[in-house]
Length: 280
Image (cartoon, rainbow, N blue to C red; front, side, top):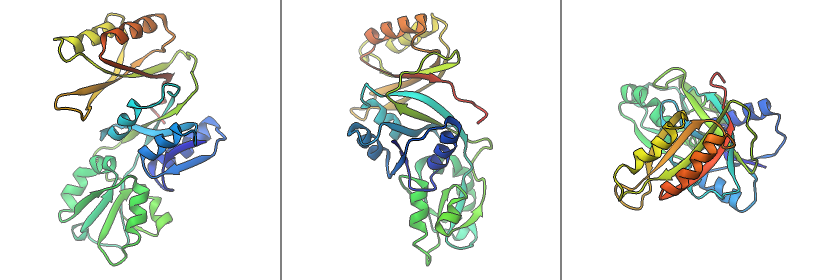
């Protein structure tokens, strides 16, 4: 069974439908209200796979997912990735002018992806973040007497009886989200792979972060992404998330990962998997 973010109508749900069609998966899908619920279900063996968004080309990292990956059981790894075009729309219970919108519900990512349009046009609106856009649409649909709106997929209008005030409101065209599948599968090298890990350098050793990056550079390992996020334990304490090209079974990469484990104060390998199609 695959766990994913719902309810019906979330961008993740639409992306998962496309991914299942492409991959010809037959597992049942169970939707949850939050990432925490998804990963709790995985640890309790209620599901055995997870399909989640990891980053967006405009909004950046989905930090709440990165936090969950830290505590992910070592039996589970990222085993595939899927990139999907995302078109944000502004929806409401009734037709109204943008300036008349009083409150907008949205997932934090969708708000970041669309903030240029919102700040320019919905000048009187307050904002309320929520776990998923489909949940936001479901909530807004109950306030027929209010000037409330939400951000999400245009198909949410059909599902929850809303009207589309404006289509494609993202800050940039070609807005894409990268989704990953987490499972117990150890994927074999395909010749076009990507790998990921999380680490923390030694704060009391000058140059320790550079030292980690040099281990990758010296072996001509191509980094495709590096990002940082706070551990929330103390000010200035960060973890780093790295993607690079190659598979953990490649000899140079296997050697590098062994070295990095000894150089980092914290290290967690997240898996090797086929590189997603950037034209999806």
